Image (cartoon, rainbow, N blue to C red; front, top):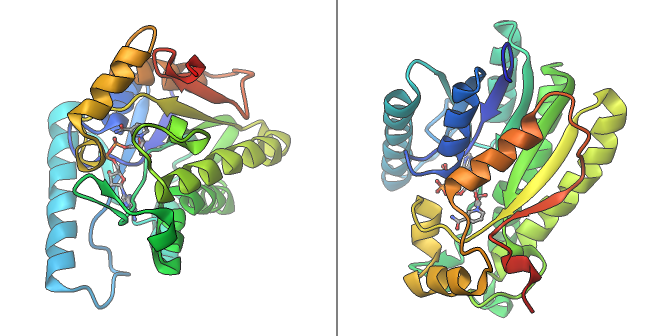
Length: 273
Ligand SMILES: NC(=O)c1ccc[n+]([C@@H]2O[C@H](COP(=O)([O-])OP(=O)(O)OC[C@H]3O[C@@H](n4cnc5c(N)ncnc54)[C@H](O)[C@@H]3O)[C@@H](O)[C@H]2O)c1
């Protein structure tokens, strides 16, 4: 299905990242992937020792996981909060004559969730609000704009992002600050679907997925009881990362006509009152 097709996969931290399941499925279906990981780039300045150590560990975990799970795949550093990092990544692809058929946005960060405790919105500072928006929502615009700037997106490409029901409903596990960023990410997806569809036939969609505790982000935010509650309330039970990957693959399929959609891969959780 994906012969001669290449997708950029963002958001792999380790083998349990949702993005890893998507990358594997693209390769299983004959496609290629370029994986990006968060690490120290030449554009990071004034990093504390602690921050540098965190980023170094993150990048080496990412590289190890990609090698073990996906084999010989191109890996690149990408920090979406640093404009020069996104520019350098896209420029490098251009210099290597690489064109892509789309990308997966699987990036989120919210410092107002610490050890599964969520700050009330009233206590969220402007900086915390803007940081979460920057990493988790604006990054979709930033990545897309640089892929277009360097003319890397083939006609009829497909972009897919990951969201959660909390973008539109207050859930039993209130995300607060992150919910606002997810709502923005969903709206950005819809606006891009219009802009890019008319530009060169590119589709943009977003998938709301069930709670998943396997990843670093999931472990940091969810309690087992959150997972269990969603599992019980969903008519089909919680969806799995494999279910998610199948849907993303479907949206990445060449010549599809689905765009601007907010899909639910959540075992039907979203229909419950
Ligand atoms: N885990 C869940 O329950 C769940 C449910 C629905 C949607 N999602 C969404 O799925 C996506 C992937 O999450 P996951 O559960 O696989 O967790 P994960 O921790 O494996 O992935 C989050 C990724 O964001 C990356 N990231 C953070 N800041 C970055 C930056 N500045 N630049 C580049 N990358 C950065 C991290 O390195 C990591 O790879 C996220 O958007 C998340 O909100 C997760």
